[in-house]
Length: 328
Image 1 (cartoon, rainbow, N blue to C red):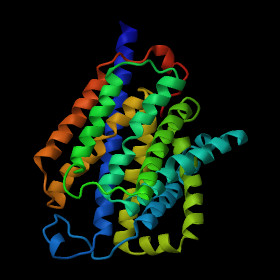
Image 2 (image 1 turned 180 degrees about the vertical axis):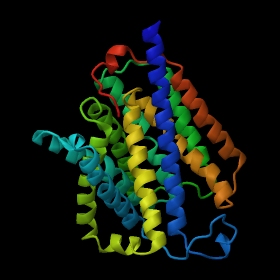
Image 3 (image 1 turned 90 degrees about the horizontal axis):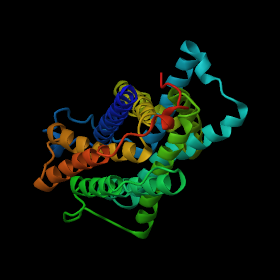
Image 4 (image 1 turned 180 degrees about the horizontal axis):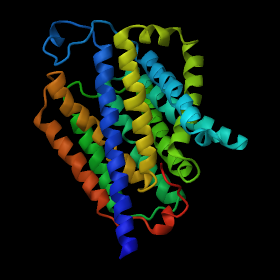
């Protein structure tokens, strides 16, 4: 009975951490929209009207990673230097985790937006649970239960309704847009699977510090330096906004998601994270006076149902958690 209670507590903790990550990621999308939208008549009714300056979304993605690395790595070196100690041979994995798992997700997502639109990019990226499910069952030995594919399908359908995929002009698919959107799904799935492997070997804060550092190297190379980042953070509002994105939509949610992988399978964690567009849509209704249709509300309900469905399966056995170090 004690073991069963422990597994139930781990399960609840895992889902809670995944939901926290979804809330924080959703706030990042809202902040990005506020930064990237010019002031005008259509924004006059916003709860907090934009400042009037537009920010390049790619530069913003690079800035949040670079600033996040600049905050987290020195903080750990000062407060808990033991977390920064890794073996030399582990640097290859940590570099791949940062470039593919962190920088890759944002880069391909913004490329998908550029070639399609936000709704299409979100929907394509959230096909990633399908990839995670197939890979986990086929190669990682995760036990197949019908609740998993049902939950995955229902969550994708819910996301499609939330982002307005079935409305006029909701989807915009080109060959290049489809390529970048599916690539974004692959990268997000890869991040989740790499994270599930890595949390058995590294503390989540170690993963984030090294991952963000290597992601920053990618962004600096891609942007051709940090002049664009400096320009974004030069103003008071810009520095506060990027600081918020770095801490509350990058460091904390990615660490929370990695910690969730200590307690629940990658498929369940990534399906739970599909709450992000639901939360963002509901918040945008109040902050940006956006419309909230009946189909979007149905989609939100479907995402919640999907999370309930995937929780209906039995918790992972104690042996699955035996080698996983604490997330603190």
